[in-house]
Length: 320
Image (cartoon, rainbow, N blue to C red; front, side, top):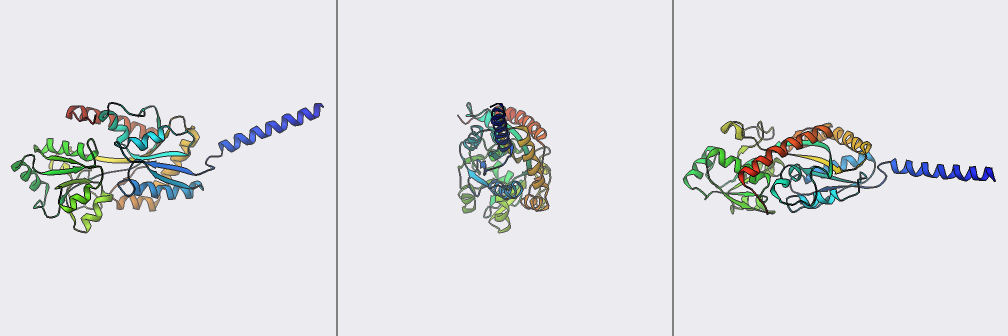
């Protein structure tokens, strides 16, 4: 009887150990990357490229789900409310953490407490672009036209409080001009090409094909240095020293995700970011590969949130 009890206890212990091992054997099922952008727009192409490479590295399917809307807060909130088990990951630009908390009086998630930053993967500026039929050949031409017709030159953004909106606010202040804001949910670049709006603010991934095809004209690049993808386009800071506006993208997981999973995700994603293929993909889109650690990324978010919070308050930009 004693031996039987011992055998039962041993069997139970082995079963518990096996269950624990299975629980720790991450990943053992498909992983979702949620991105709060529409399919085919902005950072979506990067989300899909990372999904392909992560699937190979982790040997499980990695799929992308697009959950756009509400200044990227819908998709971000979906990740915040997911189990912290490493099977739901957010891929996004920094706006839901550095801008949305100051633009919306109430968020469905806590930007500081509900997430763990995994890594910042790339950063880059955008192009100030104009409809090709306009007479603007340079930023100077635009400023002269805007000063002669206050409030008549229109610019498109992907909604109030977007990077484009805030960027144009900074540009107007620096140049002493008054532009007319036309916010879009989608389709801004289509109307820009069609001439229904005059100016746009587009990241390289969406701007470059149209610049190369001659459908749009670039007047300036908003990053800290000229884009390697379009080195003939001057930076904003060449005309207005210190005026730089860039965006970046990274990965987050829900708060409470085990540290070993966070570390493995960072290790794998950073390795992918630094691989020759991904590095080339990022640079071809006019961005700079980063691969920052979780601690470094958290620091970047804190500093940028402080800056954007002060700016948004000073400009009195509110969405509700």
